[in-house]
Each structure stands twice: as C-alpha cells, then as structure tokens.
Image 1 (cartoon, one colour):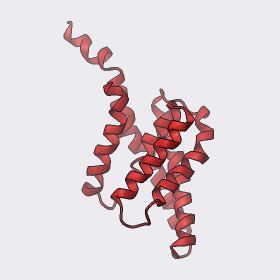
Image 2: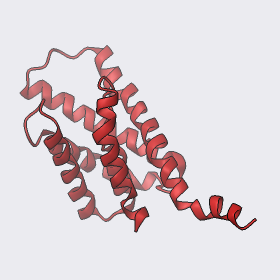
Image 3: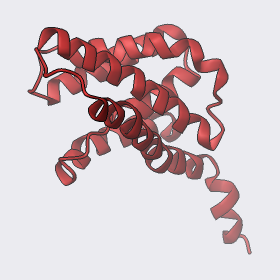
Length: 167
C-alpha cells in the first residue's frame, strides 16, 4: 500500500517545499510522477493523472491562466506516451530518461503556446537551449535522485536492510 502511493507523496512533498527553498530553479516537478504513471499504468489512468497533476500546478501557480499547465501536461503525455515501450520502469536510468523526454515535450509546448497567446519576446537560441535541453537534463537528474533512489530503496528494503537484522 505504501509503495503504491509513495510517488504521489514524494511529488506533493517536493512540489510544496522545493519551490520555496530554490525559487530560481525551474524544474518540472510533476514530470517524474507522470513518467512513472505512463510507464506502468493503462492509458486512461495516464491521461487522467496528467490532467489532475496539471490542475494541481494550475491551482498552485498564479502566473498563467487556469488550465495552461493541465493542457501542457496532457499534450506532453500525448506526445511522449507512444515512446513508453522504449523505456523500462524498473531500470534506474529508464525513469530519468523518460522524465527528460517528457520535460522536453512539455517545455516546447509551453514555449510555443506562450509565444502565441502571451506575446513573449522573440525566440533566442540561448533560451531555447537552456529551457529545452539543459533544464530537461536537470529534470532527469531530479527524477533519478528524488524518485528512482527512494523507490528503489522502498522496493528493496527487505533485501538490504532486514537481512542485517537477522545477523
């Protein structure tokens, strides 16, 4: 039961505290949860989770119109979901790479839609490289450190920690 809700609990914990500790860090906080859901759940649950996670971001943010993050999460899930067979949820790097791919799709959609609807300044290559490539790699490392590590420990708790108890 704990392992089922551990990713959601970690996402909520990180989403509530990490932006206040590091306000300049622009991480896609929900990307590892949505990547993990896309790798291990059926299609309707994946889209429902994406929509609800985006709505949670919409409720917690005030910089865009309501529904913007829901739409961008849903679009990124739609684009990236077809590639889920190339990644494995049980491998350490699989979740991190899938999270980076999800983050790239979400960021590209957000940049394009904000440029169309919110009249952003023109594109520059420095901004595109930093937002799409570098921050997506940071999102992948974030998924590796904050999600894959604790999930791996939770799955293998018996194997690593309880064997010392019997010695």
